[in-house]
Image (tube, rainbow, N blue to C red; front, side, top):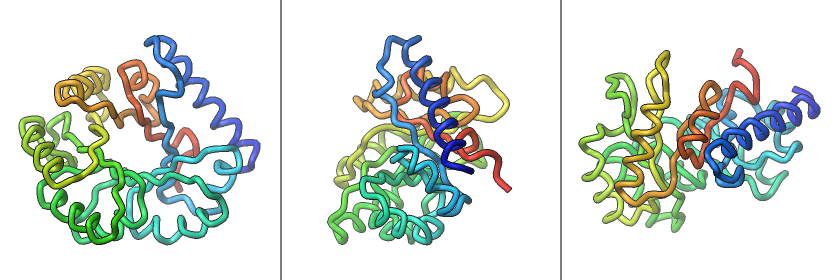
Length: 222
């Protein structure tokens, strides 16, 4: 992807976010665009950095460790988000590398993250992932388990920024986004990490504060 391509894609998505925000009487700067760079190498990421993008998302700790330390040395001010499932044994590596973790979804992970944060003295923002469609194959805590998990996370000293969800595929996402927004309000949380390439404008109109966009920025994956 050339620098011009990257800049054009980024501008188009920012305009789409601004339009969706205006529909909901929100300001575009209330929404953080996370460019999901999983499976893309440093050469594919650099044009977006050059075009001004600073928030990036990765699915796997190991993959992120392979490319981001060097990219961050080249460009200060990068904010790195872990948007994929996190195994408890990778908690320390995740805390050391990421500025935000969007997939806190079980008590054992809360414990592992709290321990890692005490050890590294780093406190990434944490989003609790909710399995909003009650799907067996998806990560996230059940809606019914959310109050207990949030209480545990807060007791453990995690910095809870909000909630995250991935709605079921092939169905209208708006009701799921609305449910996540209501849950966040009920628990006094301001952050809503929801919306991806196919549905981020809808997510923005319903209150998303963080949208996770990969394909629309980088094109399809090989």
